[in-house]
Amino acid sequence: MTFALALQDESRLVLDTAILIYKSASAEAYATKHTITRTGQAPALGAGKPLTRKALGNIVAMLGKGANTGSYLSPKILSIGFDYMIWHEAPTQQNVFFKERTASTSTASIGTRGGNAPQPGLVFAVRGNNWWVFSVKGADRPTPTTELCHSPYWNVNQSGAICTGNVKTPGCADPDSIEEWRRVFFASNFTHSNFHGAKQVEGKGGMGALWTDLLDGKYKKFPQKKLIPNGMTLSQLIQKTNSGGN
Image (cartoon, rainbow, N blue to C red; front, side, top):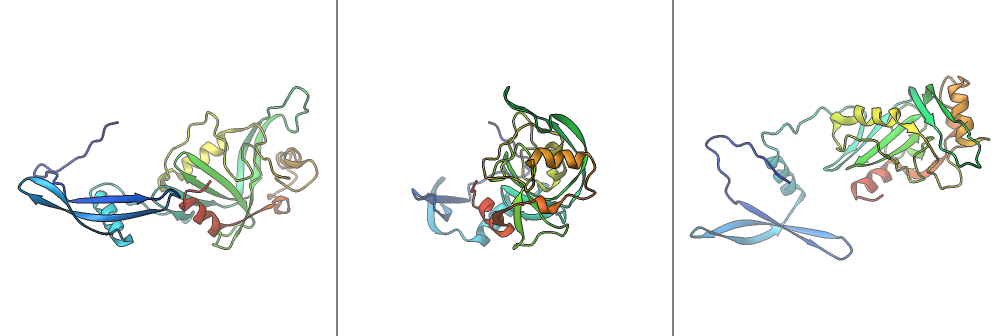
């Protein structure tokens, strides 16, 4: 792995600060910030101070100086951190594609089919190459107390995690990449159920019957009565994603 840093002609790098990170067996962490002292030309570690949130913010700002780190935050964004992003997609009409995989003894519930159909409100979460999707009732921007529901899509497990298969994702939690994440999700083929809970949606016939009705034009809007709460609020999702939980 190589790194490149563009400096002004008169600039040179001098060792200035050190950060020591202490970690317990239970993954709890503590950090101290140290100045660098010199005896002659040899650098030495100075006394440390606890690394506060403000000090950490100053370090991040210093490292990003001169880089294009600023970005307009779309109203879609619900939470954003150093390595994650959570955003909302309002209900809309969207093309979806099914290419159902079935065992030789199974009967296809929808088969190979695609078309334009109403979608529910969605909440996406991304951290690194991992991403999740949940549904929400209503069209308004979710609040911290908004109840999340299982999303009505194949290739998504009961925790909301999306199976990417061989799909190439944007790979970064960047506000400018939201539309690319969304495009990749809906441009993929929904091939199989990855849900191992009791049921993913309400109604006789489950997911196959729901999407057959949607693609047949039975509903002008996504039928919210089909959505099943997953027991988590938006606030809990933000906390879970921020802490690195799956």
